Length: 423
Image (cartoon, rainbow, N blue to C red; front, side):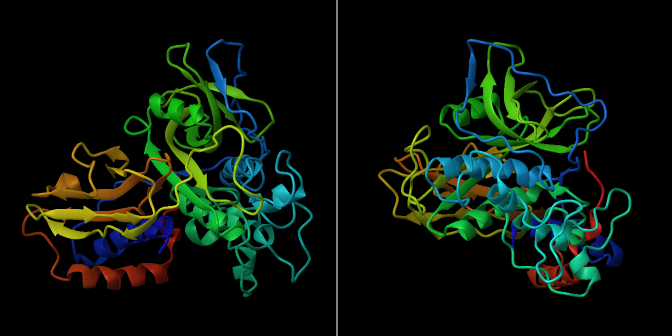
């Protein structure tokens, strides 16, 4: 099951369990956030220009694309277009400008006012029509018409952008769908290429040092931000550079509303802070691709061919129980290093293949993943697993079997229960 969908099913599990009193509420450590902006900036939003600076560092070759049926698929499309320009065949033809092939890779189908004819529906016709807006969530056309949806063929498809059944209005995207979308689209475009994505929370794992590390390595990032300074997430941006000569330092980004580079202070999201950052993602792609190995800036980064041969598994536990999460890889180059993360924060004792906690506490509830790096500087990240720790004696009698049954009920009910924009 995909991480984003599973996360929404966890929320559904809370609702069902609260209704029946079967067990204590399930803690969700990664609160869900959405992008909510449209093809134009919200009223009053200003993107500041980049000023000349000797400390300015910007990645060359990142294409700027304008909003295409959602900022989420558009910014990920820029990342895909950048790696395509390094020789990984992910978009047909030239990805340096926003041509039709690029538009179809971001979100397939027609444009507003000119949809594909019946029988040739794609992303826009199936999921973005009708173009609904908060607070009136409208059933997507494929469902309203009682016909099957098209096969997934673009970033917006894999990102569940505009999907009525998961609570997305036209152009909206959940943050939990960034990782599976990029991985799935790359696998769809060229199975010989592997995408590795790491998620960071602002104030914890997402530090300015991480931004500098990724930009200096020639790897553009994606941020989810609050452009309107109201304390709520609303927009994805493509981060292509930084300027560390100011306090606070600046991140340089494309905003999906023009083709100009902009700058914003690298600060946590808060009311009154325009372009405050909620979270971010780093990307590394590896493989020969359809046109040979990547060239140019960033060459040599993320070229590991190793694969996981053992993956960790989460579950339900009581306080005082022990936990061991382990992973193994094959095909690595030279020495392998490990780093485990709990809710995006690195574990102090998590630099080995197995993360061991001798006596769990309720605070250990959350999502766990491990970043494995070899000497080629390529890395892989294990799929996130959820660990729920109940107080001693509080583990539900139904146990895992009960959770599975409730998950099936959640799947039937649908993930659209979470429909409100969250801070």
